[in-house]
Amino acid sequence: MLLRLWACVALAGSLAAQSPAPHLEKRGAVTQLVVDGQPFLSLGGELLNNSASSLEYMKPIWPRLAAMHLNTVLVPVSWAQLEPAEGKFDFALVDGLIAGAHGQNLRIVFLWFGSWKNTWSSYAPDWVKRDFDRFRRVQLLNGSGTERLSPFCDANRIADARAYAAFLRHIKEVDSAHTVIMVQVENEVGVIPDARDHSAAANAAFEQPVPQELSAYLHQHKDSLDPDLRAKWQAAGSKTSGNWETIFGPGPETEDLFMAWSYARYIGKVAEAGKAEYNLPMFANAALIRPDYAPGQYNSGGPLPHSLDLWRAGAPQLDFLAPDIYFEFKKWTGKYDRPGNPLYIPEAAGDAQSAANVFYAVGAHAALGFAPFAIDSLEAGGPAAREMSRSYDLLGQLAPLILENQTRGRVAGVLLEELTPSQRVRVGEYTLNVSPGGPRRIFPGEPVSPDTARGPAPHGVFIATGPDEFYMAGSSLTITFAPNTPGPPIAGLATVEEGRFVDGHWVRGRVLAGDDTGQGNSVSLRDGILRVTVYRYR
View 1 (tube, one colour):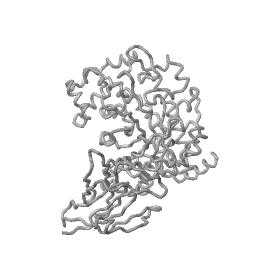
View 2: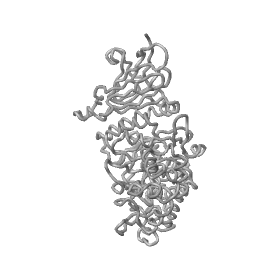
View 3: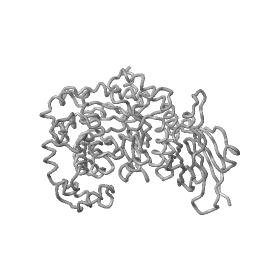
């Protein structure tokens, strides 16, 4: 079976090899992921941490994910399995994962579980774990060791970077079909329960002057720094030389910044080694701060909003920094959608609400992609799987229109919550007044209950494809239109059509008017796609 799949990969690769490797490209107002020469919207899901450790285990999972309308799977790869003995690499698992995804027309974002996975070093090889004199660990203030490799140990970084480079070199050699489109470098790094590493090397680095390249970055970008970082720097006198406490003041927040710089420098060097072999887009991800958590209670040193500037200065080899969002979705998307840092969500809650959140991320923030965690554990036909499948089906149909019109600022998205029960969004030459609509449509054979009828929060994406033409999809919304350019002041509905895109072509369903359009004044979204044309009158 594996040989047959590789034959398919080779055939597709003969065509894909004519295109440049997957890469990020600034197009108009947004940054897009480009795969085989075309912009690509990654509708993904992240596997449970250990699912991909067995090709046999994955066999029934690949077709199930494809049936849910995913086009991308986020797949962990363990350093321990890749390099079980020092200098001895085993790529059989990687080859099988690429072939398995390609066989279902799925792309892969590999997650490199190298030195760290959620602060721990549990995916490092045994030969690294056992040699704690050579491969030094993070130490706590009380002197005890931890199962975390220290970012202040050159041997750790050199070994990790060597393995990562071999991994990327092999992908380039075997993946001519561009099944692999991005790589996450490490996973949710940071220190817990202290705010920083207290090993001898870390203590010495903390007392040293802040590196000149960071001081220069702070001065050069002083007007665009994260507000919290700028306030902390200014409160300490906006100094450009001195040690960490001189520049940022004493306290655990400064220790967090110190670790952020240290992890960034380490991971940047690992990414650099990989990019030298195969220049795929690469990123680092963050476990976010829960309300009222202090450094050490959260992953201190991770690429969090207040320390993104340190990461960008310390790891310019990374293409962007990404949030793993399980709460306060709108807040965190806004904090990571910044100039020079396109939004990508590699991990999100694997629940039905994610089916609404993805519309907002794509429509309001031009997200490169989205991926609920533990996608392979969702109960087939259960509420979360059903809702995600429905959302990915709709967004997959609309992806070409979304990607084309993003570049011209003609796409918007909404997510109606308690604090935003209605929204006004400007799309093209009209302002859309969006409010909650009726309950979502219940499909034949679907069990009915109050929770089923309610579903995720009202959500939608809107695309202006012409001066008076829109495509839109979502659930439980009512929309009216108001002109925002000179001319007749009232907007009316010309044509409203239900339908689907089949092989890129619009196939019309019912044509709506009268009672189904509020007597010509409004349209309702109930889990489908509408094509709407409007006109103006006085």
